[in-house]
Length: 446
Image (cartoon, rainbow, N blue to C red; front, side, top):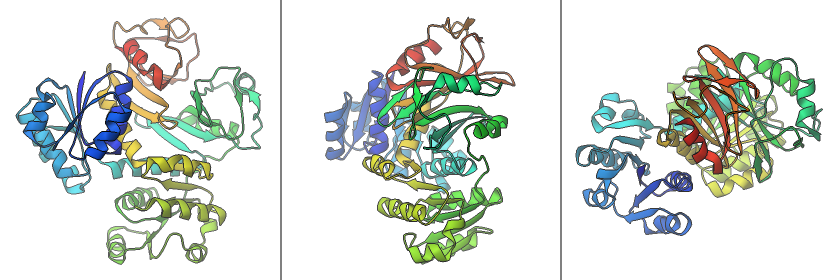
């Protein structure tokens, strides 16, 4: 497979890094030599200095031989031009573009004429991720599969958890009749596919696949509440904040938005139905106290300023907010934010990269999500006829090392499987895998 990436910013870099690990033939185009230098020094991919919308650059990248073009610069217009040229001049089979402007993103006729399939809106993807967390406030991360019927919930083990410091097999022995499975375990910087011998420690993050209708039972077992957040305070009224407020209003939540820009406040007041819009600074402790921060189910900081988001979330946590969700654009700040004890930290660039990557996989990949600082992935795929999985029980299937099938979906039946369960052609499976095993998983599914 040959992939051309237009844009060597953080999104382009992360996509190139993932694909390079899997030995995909990648060419990165960017006009900024500093960004290309980072790619050259850290990744084994080809680079071209030039405009992504230039016929010369695309010709040098041998676009006529490319399977996919990913246009992920910070300019919607540059991305659209690159896709148009890839379609008209080089007949590239698939063009994927990062599109921020709602007028472009919502214009399906325009996108079809440009050959863009699909367009990815980073702000919308982040807003959806935040809403998933607000619907399951105890979680540090929530991903949805099979149109929301299956959720994978990342849960940070508290100090007082009954089964802390015990091996997983002891958990399974006392679990109610419904099957319970931990797909991924994150222990500090270490990420693993756990076995029954692995021990759960306070501070570990475990990723659990759950059927939508069984969330209450599983969460009761994990000693947490599954009630969605109904009182939400947002810092930042940009596109992400606006999308979140719109979604939560429709779900009946009470929303307060703190925004510094007066003109943006007027827009939010006229565009939202019920949200309370406050002109102020989200890191102003006096304002937070006046607005009853301690009574909020969730505090969400999604401004364009990483430092403000981190400081505001720390302040809200100290003042009694039940949950904090923090947006961090700079990936080098992610580990810092986690080390400060913030509950849920989201990176728009990593979310965007993960959204795009699902379209670059081999086999019948339906969706894909990178988790645990991109050291692991959750893959939803359909089992093809003739696949190495077909007709075999999971214990006999020869699954790659560091890989686990967490869910089998057969028609309307959804099951959390054990080793005796058999996979059939046409089944959908949700697979947990560490990054080094992704290539073997794709081969297994093909």
